[in-house]
Image (cartoon, rainbow, N blue to C red; front, side, top):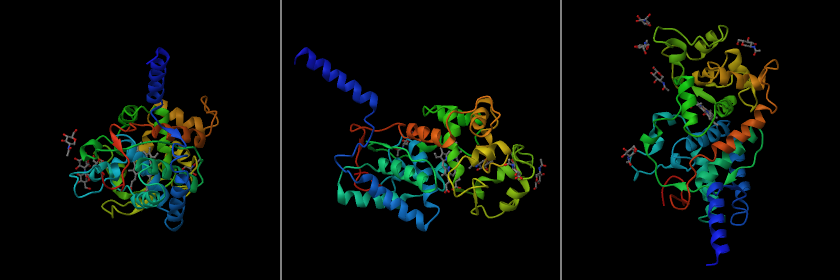
Length: 325
Ligand code: HEM
Ligand SMILES: *[C@@H]1O[C@H](CO)[C@@H](O)[C@H](O)[C@H]1NC(C)=O
Ligand SMILES: *[C@@H]1O[C@H](CO)[C@@H](O)[C@H](O)[C@H]1NC(C)=O
Ligand SMILES: *[C@@H]1O[C@H](CO)[C@@H](O)[C@H](O)[C@H]1NC(C)=O
Ligand SMILES: *[C@@H]1O[C@H](CO)[C@@H](O)[C@H](O)[C@H]1NC(C)=O
Ligand SMILES: *[C@@H]1O[C@H](CO)[C@@H](O)[C@H](O)[C@H]1NC(C)=O
């Protein structure tokens, strides 16, 4: 091999590794219709069920935070013992039928080409757009993971976590305090089960008290929706004002003490995350952001989509999203 060839080989190797093989339009030659196929499944399902868009957005987060964005959360196969999906932290996730349906269509058009992890990432973007959120280009080229283990989901961010724990769990995934706030902004859509509320409303510090971060005018409203010892399966909007629409209202709620779940309220406990919230919704903030919440949210989503991406050596393209090949 000539010297220049050796140099080129090394250069190309570094280039590919540092780019982590993700790129916008990764399937443009091999499966040019991938985005429209995923989009049509997501749009159709979201039209008949308002839960679909929030499910799909949340699914991408829960996939990326355990073992990286690799479809590990999708494994649902009796042959796998203790798959990740059984983890406490994944309670209430959904959207699996739409991912599997898109996969089926894709296996007809371009068999063996598109990873389930990429379908999840594309579906999350389409979900955001369908509820009035910003469009962004989704990088693709992820491989599906070969591991799905319940134990690995133990450190999912929890609704009860303090702001310090939330910050460190995001930092562990390479995400900043700013990205913690932006991504939590996904709670501008969707609902929570009352299951996640009792501690916040009735026993916050173990003394039959409620979270002092709750606006006193809002506390009776929340208590009425989720009464003590009431049905934990009752669902209430995460954004009490504009729950159907993707907007910055959730950040305004956090500022006003009208966030619904505790982890959103915690974003106002800390100087840095409070300044980030204010930078989008408080005109008098000295740190007013140049960009809107919606714009910065898309950048944070792209970054989240790069967590722990698998390559050919530790991943595959699944034939069915719920099972390893
Ligand atoms: C900061 C850490 C986070 C915590 C502790 C957290 C916690 C929760 C909880 C407890 C629920 C209610 C689940 C249910 O009752 O079914 C929920 C729902 C949701 N989460 Fe998060 N979340 C976090 C971050 C995120 C991120 C980063 C995203 C996406 C980028 C996201 C997207 C959603 C969506 C869309 C819903 C609504 C789901 C539905 O309507 O079924 N969350 N989250
Ligand atoms: C799951 O992961 C844990 C922690 O890494 C490990 O101890 C356990 O053996 C794994 N379980 C399976 C079934 O691989
Ligand atoms: C939150 O903490 C309470 C009490 O500390 C516990 O009963 C509950 O299961 C926790 N909820 C979640 C979702 O972790
Ligand atoms: C309130 O929380 C404390 C401490 O976490 C716990 O010991 C107690 O059992 C809880 N009370 C109720 C009524 O759940
Ligand atoms: C909290 O309320 C429960 C019953 O709702 C009561 O048994 C308990 O003594 C109270 N605990 C405190 C610390 O007030
Ligand atoms: C703040 O919350 C209170 C109580 O729910 C509500 O009446 C008020 O309109 C809210 N203010 C803003 C600026 O959102």
